[in-house]
Amino acid sequence: MSKDKFIIAKKNFKSRLIVGTGKYKNMKECAIAINLSGADIVTVAVRRVNIIDKKKPLLMDYIDPKKITYLPNTAGCFNSKDALRTLRLAREIGGWKLVKLEVLGDKKNLFPEMIETLKSTEILTKEGFQVMVYCNDDPLMAKRLENSGACAIMPLAAPIGSGLGILNQTNIKIIRSQTKLPLIIDAGLGQASDATIAMELGCDGVLVNTAIAKAKKPFDMALAFRNAVIAGRQSYLAGRINKSIMGERSSPKKGII
Amino acid sequence: MKKKIKIKIKLNGKTKNVDKNSKLSNIIKNFKIPLKKVAIELNEEIVDKKKLNKISLKTNDKIEIVHFIGGG
Image 1: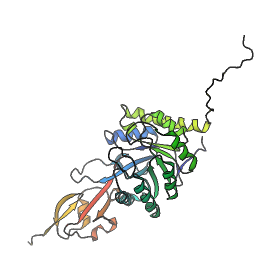
Image 2 (image 1 turned 90 degrees about the horizontal axis):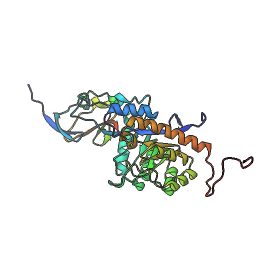
Image 3 (image 1 turned 45 degrees about the horizontal axis):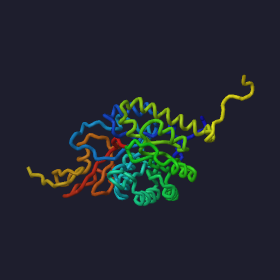
C-alpha cells in the first residue's frame, strides 16, 4: 500500500477522503471532525465577509491552510459567470489554483448544469486553474470534461446532501474504465459503507460533507469514513473473487469421515 | 472647518455613506481582517491588494470583500 499514491494535479495527498467544511454546528466541531477524518483536502466556500459582526470567527483560524489543502468550491453558483467570478476571487485570496467547480442547474435536486460546467472548465483551464469538476454520472460528459482539461472527475453518487449512496454503480464503473484521471465520488453518500463501495468500484477518492457533519455523532462518523475509505481501497487493490450463482465449498472433500 | 462631502457606495450589498475620495484601503482597515485572508472586488473587477491606497471611491461604487467559509 505504501506505493499506492493519491495524486491530483501532480500533487501527492495522504488521504483519499476529502471532506467538506459546511453544515457543522460550529467551527470547532468542524476542525475536530476534519482532524479525525484524516483528510488533507477540505472544500471551502467563498462568501462575503460579515460587515456587521466583525468578530465572527474565521475558518482560517480553525483550519490552517498551510497544513490542510483548501479546495475552493463554487457551491451555490447556477451559471458559468458566477462560478468563474467565485474562483477568480478564491485565487486572489491566496493563490489557490486547485479548485472545485460546481455549477448547479436545479434548486431542488441540485443536479449539476453540465453545459455551463463544461464551458467553465474550458475557460478556467485556459486561465491556469487546476479544475476538479463536480458532474453527473454520465460517462460521455465525463469524457468531455476530461478533454476540456479537468484535473479530476467528480461524479455524484446521488443528489447533494441526500444520503442515498451510489445510485448508478454501473456508470461509475464505466467512467472508471475510460479515464486515468483521479475519479472522486462527490455528493450523496450517507454512511461509511457507501464510501467503501465507491472505493471498491475503483474510485480514487470520495468527498463527503453532510454524512459526517449531520451524523448523530459527527466525530465517530468522521473516523468511520476514514476507515471505510482505507478498507475500500485495500479491497479494490486486493482484487475481489468472481461472483458465482452456485456455492463453492471452502473445506476440501478429501478426508471427510 | 469645511464639511466633508459624503457619497453613497455599496459594500457587500449594503449601502454605506463614506467621505468623498475615501481610499479603498480605509474601508478595508475597518474590518480588522488580514488582507491575506480576503479578496476584494470593485465594480466586479478584482482589485490588486497592493494598490488599495491608490483607489479613491466614487458614488455608486460596488465593493465586495469575500473570504473562505465552511462549505461542501
